[in-house]
Image (cartoon, rainbow, N blue to C red; front, side):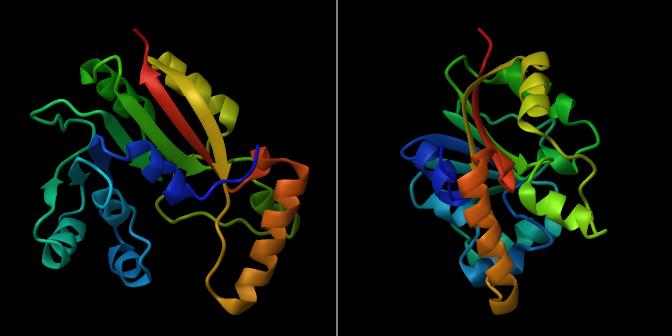
Length: 211
């Protein structure tokens, strides 16, 4: 198994599908993602048959609307939003680690999706080599809004408990665009590739509802 590019992996699994994208604005980094050309929602918009965006941040949705007025966007809580028409896939990338009760979201989704709907998740990896290296140096990096870290095993167990069956698992690394930071970042990518992709920066999962 090799490390994957997170955005490409997700985009490839949404190609030609009707997709609900939860946390689409990536607030508070919306402007940065747009400027860097790294906004996942824009990548999905290029390949999906239909794309519905949902985000709890009114500021993030307003910014997306100002740049992309043609997009179908909604300010709503992902735990209660249900699309008016069926979707083929639900994308929740870098979202569940922000939630106080991620199981509630997963159980809610399982209650209304069809048996063939794909749930496509990504989340930081609790056992990443990069995170362990920082811990050995007496430091810890976490997004200021993160409240939980998942490993492959704990994420799979949570999905099972909330009505999902994992179909595919992969791992990704994040490289820095800054020159000085990119050197150790790429070294970590190389070591992770050589040792085990399971120690990558994040986990990617595709799952379907238990029939």
